[in-house]
Length: 636
Image 1 (cartoon, rainbow, N blue to C red):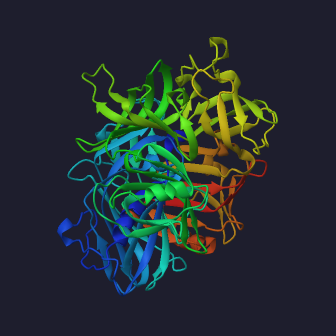
Image 2 (cartoon, rainbow, N blue to C red):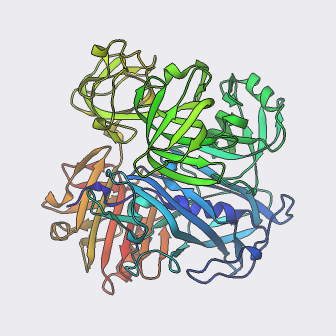
Image 3 (tube, rainbow, N blue to C red):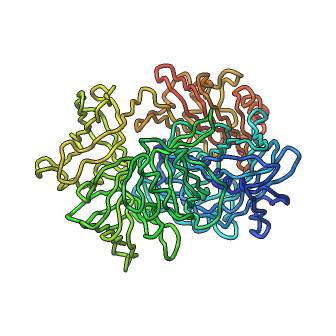
């Protein structure tokens, strides 16, 4: 069994991004052949005054995994109505890093499309020039090692594009009605869509077998964010309007969205922090077109978005400075070493990944903390902190040098960071961890020199102290796995080493299951019924890779003598069951387990199973997984 690096995160994000594009098209027509991108000249734009259109709100997310970066181009998206009408949007090719959407869902469209019942979606992705970095210590996957799973050939020009067609379940189709808002959440599962071989050595190869699913309900478990130019603000209704412009597009509009605010909403506007009405009042003074990013939540009942944190003007990454997002792994004076930096350049415009970047700061650097008000300085930037730094970027002068970002006249935003480990000493207000990782990096990647008030009090991985904010209690016991989200303590101020806003109990964490048979397996199921499926122990032992992961702990399902039982999670509010056909890259989405099994039974016998992935609560003593998400890939 190879380790869990085999599969990756929710690439559905890819589908969603194009979905955003598509949803802005209120006229349409024409079609696109499989694997062929439509010409941008065929695009039909939409005005907000479309008389027979409804608003389609599309959100995109990505699940945690082992990709540091997954940058590809989304070049086309089509939605097909039940009468065969194709609504097509072909925006300028959009470069997207889906690895940046691990803990967020992005609203990628709030545009108008013609009323009707939409039954399928088609998206085209282009891997030419792709940047894929696996979190296994390598510097990146060579472009020739990104393999089309259907053909076994590299995804390089002229065969660099992948076209995916998703047929929506008859019980889960998108109904767009005039004057109303309909939600569409297309989930491209990177975890199930990519196989990484080998997992711990170079050169790494990524085999792409895309898996998509669809839902009419946004993912309520993650914070939403929306990006776009400012339109107007209304202090009487405590709201503002932006033109939706997803990801890092420099032009275009994907509909308008009204963003609500509250008395606790925090703002960073041109480097200055505000809270509540003071922030909205300042926002109202901005010139139309000023770039805005808002983080918040979506209310499915009122169909409204409310912001908890708003960035505007120069506080938005990449607006008037180069921007670098990454994790500080060492600090010496005013020099930061930032690992796995995601860089947005102004000139030349574009995105890039850097394994290591040197960032310089000084007393003139503006420092803010995402979601928090108050005064911050560069002293608050310490080892382990995830940051968004803005300044002047300079590429490496040679293969042996390191790129730099000069933020001395720029800014740094502190971003919520995740620490994981096993509990060594639980307490009411402080937990001591045997640290495993920060921001996904192994504890050994960090140089904690200078983090403590004295060198003797510098943070250590074997006894990393986490302070719990008032009102936050720890449900954890000694030796149990733990995860906390918050901010690293200021440099030179530890202990504590970390200030937690949220604690995660793995008792209720869904398990992630991956099983694959690279050469195919004719019938891995000993039971297939409307209530359960069972992967037999023989099939599990014959798999190329197999793993169950809960949090950062893994187990091997091939040790289950009675096989692995998967039943639908009856308590789940949303369930996704997908059958993928890798030769044609056509996918069928189901919302009921019975329909999924019936279709699977029809397919089996004529083709082999290549891969199965599932997610849900797992009971190790019984070998039972209650799944709300199952994807099966077939070799046809």
